[in-house]
Length: 125
Length: 367
Image (tube, rainbow over all chains, first blue to last red; front, side, top):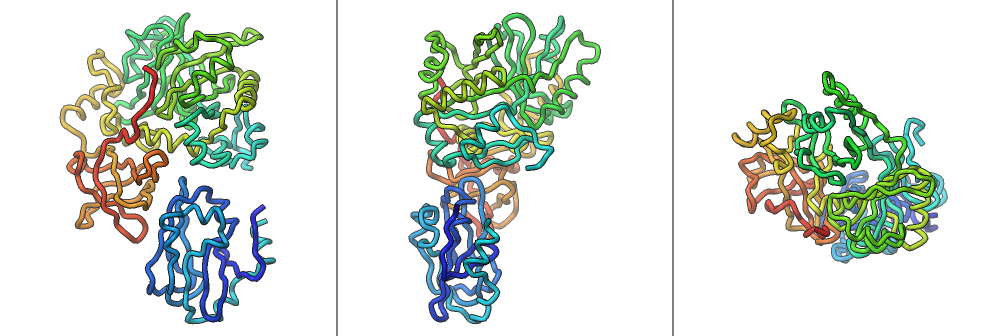
């Protein structure tokens, strides 16, 4: 069974969001990494890029397929986890530890559209 | 599960092993067990086994069998000794490919044609249509056979242990032995495969194949899914029907003319292929290396520096054995020479690369 962490928010496209004030820390769920299998490449955006909620900001590549990443919130990308460029397998090893981007939110009310852990658990059953 | 999907004789074994299953060529097939990278490396470094029972087995027999096979097959079976195997294609008159296949020359009489799972019905129908006027019997026996591919540097030791036959070490590349199981059923063992490593393919009854699978598993052979079957064949520069060979991609375009014997008096597609060979083809399958870890996938555009599209990726991976991003692509022949700079568009960005040899990985066949 894949792991789900309480206190985080989740999108339908399997990103998780950890909220710290108006900063959204974004990664992919354990369910998503397990579905993808061995992740071999993370296509990261650049710091300073603007993203809109629902917009593609990068991709994860497994051996077999690529899977686009969608930002659950709008704002400015303040940090990118460059460690994943050299070590993409960290997403498999610890999906909740391997954050991908940090977004300074322009509209935190967008968070209301996301799921809590219980709701997310239902869609990954 | 889709009710229309067929299953192989090892389906229960795959489920018991917790394989990730997916539809392939009309069958519910294992894509991976432990993980594609682990399975890929097992075949390169030790020994792995694949359920390839979905492949088709079509027998051709009768007084005209040799002439007929040579009529529908691009390679030349006239000098093929009993126990010998040839790779080649069946082509349409315009040179497009019906299928690529192995032809086994039987010890008694006739031939065994091993064809792609997705094409069994199409191939069988094609052969029947072509056989009008020939004295041949064509029989699709695919449902009676299971097949395991045992692949990797440890395959020989493993096979000898399994069968208790030291003689199997003497089996040469692209030849086969006929053996019998305890009930007198036929077992075919050939030194063939689709991985670039030494290895064998074992054909037997479904019951026997289940026993062989269990014995190999018990002995620690790593079960491998179709995921790594594709990464392995790709690195070894081997085409997959539907990607690098198709009704639109001829053997000449795919760089496989060596399997078309133009000194044969005739075969279906000969004229068209000879013309392609002599006059050149508009597009060719090439290998491209990308100077980045981004992964070129099938369907991505191949471009020149100015953004003009000159081709399309047919298969691509971040190569597990070579640790670089490489692909096969169908490109305009003007841009197919080794060393030509080409660019692959991956999502929003364009990555530079160049044309390299298609044999990405140095194969380890036992010849």
